[in-house]
Length: 281
Image (cartoon, rainbow, N blue to C red; front, side, top):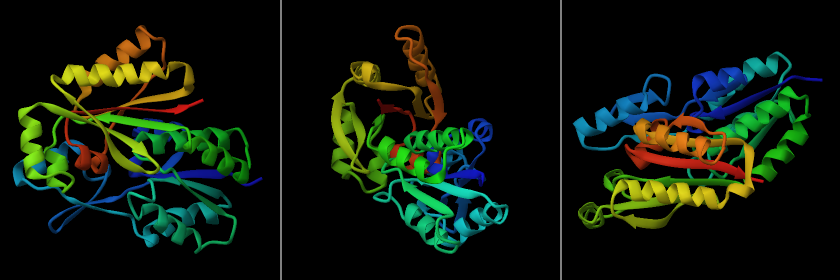
């Protein structure tokens, strides 16, 4: 039986230690400031991105890895006799998944399975972890693919965004909406639905109120949460994330994995973003 190697991309927001523990390979997206091209999570971290945005006043562009980059990543494993399962960022948000599929066509049929997560951030990572554990247990490629396609329908991702500035700079809200939102202290709540990001609600008031609502939304679903992985993800909001993690574990007995948003997710949501991501049972 061929060994199965799991691949994902840098939007998975899995830390290096977690990826190494489960032997998950990662292909980085590009983050481009003017004529400077960086690799997400390789030679540019989220804190670097925030500093550059603050000093330059504009957001970078992000770009998918090319099919050639995927081929270069896949090829050594195929040559070693491994089959590959790739789990990627939603095809509705990026060309990353399509480019991975094009790369897979370069190799013999049936050696690489590409799974569209229809999600982002650590929901992509959650599926990659499920794939890695299934591969470790000896499941064949076809069974892993079926399991992932079933699990992606049960993913939940919800984020509280602290400021509308990044949504404005990224062209996702008007200058007037950003200005009024700042005056009224509006905290947008973003969810992933059908592979895309939607504005689920707007919470007016202090940041603590928005975080409490995020927590309450999770607790409402407590009995429907798969206990494998609950991710609490943040962008430059470690203190808040640690506080929420402690409450979820101590008050509600939930197992929580902390994750830091990478450059791509951070460039859309901005600093002080906090999200909860999990899979329903």
